[in-house]
Length: 419
Image (cartoon, rainbow, N blue to C red; front, side, top):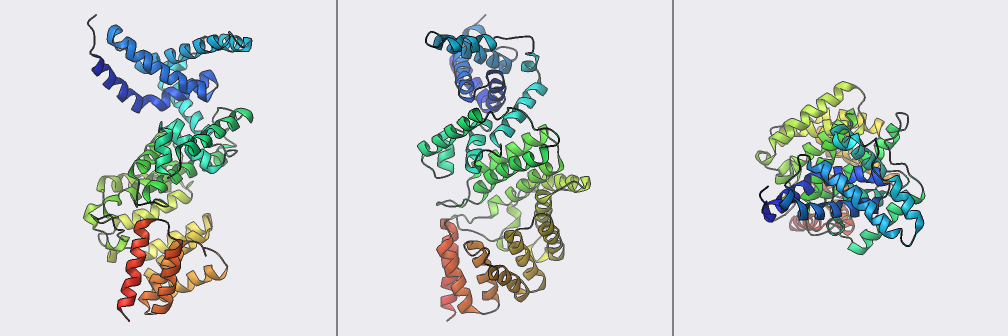
């Protein structure tokens, strides 16, 4: 057999790592029962491939080869440790390949393992920030440094968060399995929350110099596609639709200089029509199931916006109706706020302002900069400039994202120029 240039093998392995890391890791975690051992096994398997494939050739089923090699590497590692701890030898014997390994070769077996990994990383016993970090590390394959950079967290802090999450899974004996049918609705909610949290951090960063972080949104959409493939439930379809419809506006949400552009001022020719078409199709199918929930309803609202040829053509009565249904299905002051803004567009700024003031009167959203910004904008439309200025200033004091701060300062400057 002729030798394969090592650079060619390196390129094949780079592609395999990006495409197969999650699948290989998920199966090795099931086989080895240990996150850290499985991670080391994946790295050892890829290192072994780089050494052997140039001479032996690329195997017919590279993924199965990498899983099998990773498993043997892990067993070897345990046997080396057994020189100091006899218990490791017993564990190594248990991990020897048996008759139940057919799943290594099948796509269905791999999919099951991925689904187990997603649900384990999103277990409700873990803190929400730990679920996000662990999902991005173990399911999406992002490095600790990449996740830390995305969330503006120091890498050692992020690493500790992941270590504690793994220890929690081990110590609490959280099972590596997909929940039962009875448990699924509650557990699926946690998974969808994590995926949407990742997307939102990428779509509208909570702080920092950049308004968006495209790589995080892309990972969340990839995870949503994977989840839908593994678990074709209506709310999974609704969440993927919502992410695609929001992502379709990414190119129009900022000016060439990075400044925030509001929805009504966006150049709609920049919207991604392929993503809109896919999102609309998904949301229509989710609605037809009649088993949809909040993500599908939010996707339906995004679809109404997406289908308007210009801001003035937006079907605000339909959007208000959808928000009313959403407020009953998933009550929250933020949804009330969004509905108030839609009511203002349908019935005029005074109607929306009354609804926002009612939220504040209950003491809710007082620390939410977008609520004060929305109130300021309605006051500005009503020429109640002193109230508008006060609300913009309050919003500015709460905003943590630099482009939003610049937007609010511009609004304040415009008010000053009207004096």
